[in-house]
Amino acid sequence: MTTELRVLDPADWDKWYAVLELAFGGVPEADEERKLWQELTEHERFLGAWEGDRCVGTAGAFTFRLSVPGGAVVPAAGVTMVSVAGTHRRRGVLTSMMRRQLEDVRSWDEPLAVLTASEPEIYGRFGYGVGAYSAHGAIDTTRVRLVVPEGTDGVSLRVTSPTEALDATEAVYARLVTTRPGMLERRPGWERLALIDPPGDREGASPRQCVLAERDGEVVGYAHYAIKPEWSFAGANGSVSVQQLAGLDPVAEAALWRFLCSVDLTSSVGFRSRPVDDAWQHLVTDLRRCEPTLRDALHVRLVDVGAALAARTYQTPVDVVFEVTDAFCPWNEGRWRLIGDLEGAVCVRTGDAADLSLSVRELGAAYLGGASLLSLAAAGRVREVRPGALREASVAFGSPVAPWLPHGF
Image 1 (cartoon, helix red, strand yellow):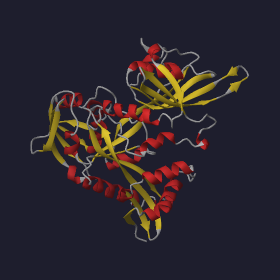
Image 2 (image 1 turned 45 degrees about the horizontal axis):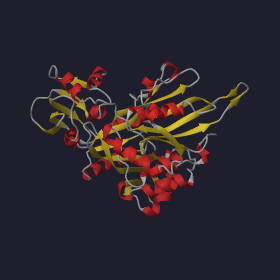
Image 3 (image 1 turned 90 degrees about the vertical axis):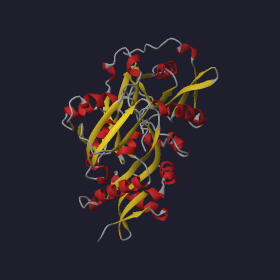
């Protein structure tokens, strides 16, 4: 039968979502989580691949605004819930959905598309580059100490529930969005994601808890965490799992780490999805024992090269002509002249000779400052045409802080 792409009808959501669940292992989600995703679904931005009344593929794109270097927040489509039924692999279903989706994103005047990948190797061929990484690790609190900055004792801490602290924690998060590229403004409804805590997903740990850092009556930081009690013949050997941690200043953040590293009856503090330049690695006395690891986090795709490059600022003055290849979105193909600095930028089509040659995938990787154009060139993925242009552009595209995606979608 012929496969047809259709905008998701709300009446078909259960059938559509069942295809997605089966593609990801077939284990049903907790009712509260499933209900949240159903409520957050923007049906007019979601697609299904159908054979008659049978759904064989799914894809969606949330409406987001993403922070970029310079502090602006830019419209970005949050690509999500992508799947193809196992019976319909290698028939072009995914390619057709990705092509249609990027055409839609362009029609919505959103210059960027972003995603987190269950299988990272898939999305490079559609023009996505890894634009932000995350750090994972575990602090062995029996052997590793924290050296915190002065003033930490002036921060008071209060343990509460994530629900009771929701307004305060969302206010802290909102103040931090523009301070680091890659963060998402949370639209109404998304704050509930932090409250999803089904017992079946805890693996023996406690319900999620929240600790607030306060100074002079103001909440200046918070952490969400859970405690997993464990005992051996020698005694307690529990662990703390950190789900979120944010502070408005270094002292508040250090106070939160110190609290988590001193929870009674525990000997380790594990965390995932932290910024690669996060402060914790400079607070610990022995980084090696924390076994930090790196993982891809946010994949970035420039849907409109000119609009995307003009939306951010640049660390140093730059005037460079890119020769861009983009077989999947041919409207991006050709030469673009970027002129920018810390105050702003313009990027327009040009007939001038190219200074650098690359694909849209490399622009996505470098866009937030997560990967340098120099490192991409060392891998043979950027070609310098004008001597000196590579270093000039690489420095300009940098970010003073590493990009970071605080949560998935």
